[in-house]
Image (tube, rainbow, N blue to C red; front, side, top):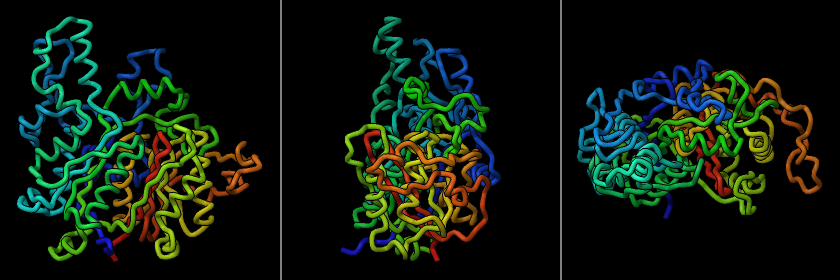
Length: 449
């Protein structure tokens, strides 16, 4: 069976310090940083090493926390100031699930789908997160275990606000879809992994339309965990703290957000006159197979490239490679060398969106996919912000006898890493995302020309 083409017909999401996708697009292509000091992290003083984040406040996304009258600091429900989501749907959702529903509303509006199409058994939902429900869980358990509150004080929605697939479930209930309702969890590859899985469901005829994406609701728990690992950026001004490929990079910026896309079988979208924002040419994912939970593998990434492009390397050669680019010392260098090993060192540029808004964990791949769609629309490539100084000496691992990649230092590829937005013809973008547990995901995205 020949796979069907898959079109992107709608995009939406929640983006740090942005009130709309238009503001997000404007700031990204104006080389703005969305990273700032996070007041909640600062409250913990010297217990925290890092205090910067790409976050969105409740006020900025039009929400208000309604506290419980029976429990301490427990959010009984989040109120939507603009009445975008019915109260019944809000009662079953944590913050990330609300973001998923808001992003879905925007994506469906852009797609032009009718209520009949949305509520069809041929329309599914595939949305995941890296972690979630933490804020609700922490306060629940504190009230029960430490403050000796009764379980009934938690109300009847504690479970559905913290279950693994709460984002997909809440979206499906909101839009009343009748097709697939699932979530894929693959750490920091989750966002792209859910979109890739949705692509496959449509490509092989199992669904005609899918709402897909990734979410990472604001969570001090996630932030604390990574701060404990000593992998978060520190010692820089907020807007300069995420610096992929820069020689002084010392960790990533833990951020939060949501990316949602509306995908549809290309021929169906074309037949109804839809505005096709982009076409997914292929998706591929794999594992490194190295046995290492954290360290990236150039061998695994090379197999990822081979699986993605294979015999179509020349036909699908990208104008832009949107890298994972977290700003970690080992990960950035290996990823850059993997790209160069496979594509050579000319004919394309590299974009590192995390340099502008940090690492959104489970939402990262989906938000960056949304940005890739905007790159195709605007014919502009977002930069590798803060990549001011590149290492002019080979990395330590490049000197090892069995190193299979280039021997050239990072600085040799300065021309691929622009520090400002580049206006250029962009017909095709490869998006890359990786996650703990040696998981890798990649997609090829093209203009509909």
